[in-house]
Image 1 (tube, rainbow over the protein chains, first blue to last red):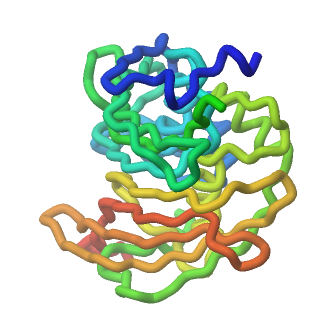
Image 2 (cartoon, rainbow over the protein chains, first blue to last red):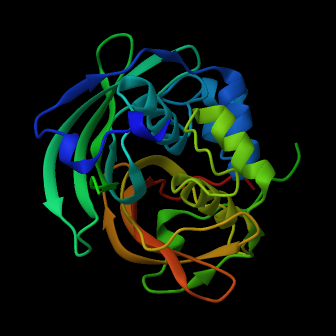
Length: 148
Length: 141
């Protein structure tokens, strides 16, 4: 399905995408704790978190980051991505169990790379919850193949 | 009451001290679990998604001799992926606190962190910013 991928040359500055929603579940958080080994009480101790400013367990920040990477693949036709090479990211608010998040993304820069067969695409990304609150935002730099 | 496990507070952190974590081998199971969780797909089953080592490094930090840091919130990160990893590579992380800024509630710390492979080569590198709790005034005897 390689021909369906979009190359550096095909991607226009200013393009915007919006993903479908994804409800973050308790199972997501437990799975992420097991995968990452990060068992911080913030994510794993319901009783402790009841007394906290959040009132309940919250998702790992990096779970939100990882989930949005998947949402990006559902928001637009696949890029001919070689690699994610850079990331600048802010965690603005908690993602709680049952929250439904979606990704809004925009191409904000296209930069020539050292090698002529690829270019760097910078995508600004915002994760919104069901109340339209920004929970995470940042930029990612993707190395994308050029058309041969 | 069971005794409280030791915890590491803002006051306990020293600037510049380098911490090396134990290592973990990145397996096909890690990659499949990550892909199932995120739906970040790839035809190459042995390619390690770039964000997976970043996720694993947070757990590795829990396996050091230093007691767990009282993180109130993860505020942000800057991160660079220097080279790709394959299933079977073994990574560990190295970190040091480079900035400490006390606030009224807790304090902000910036930590430099690297993920290194089995050859000692840095594969990912960046900075994490955390809001960390201060030691409570009263400690129950």
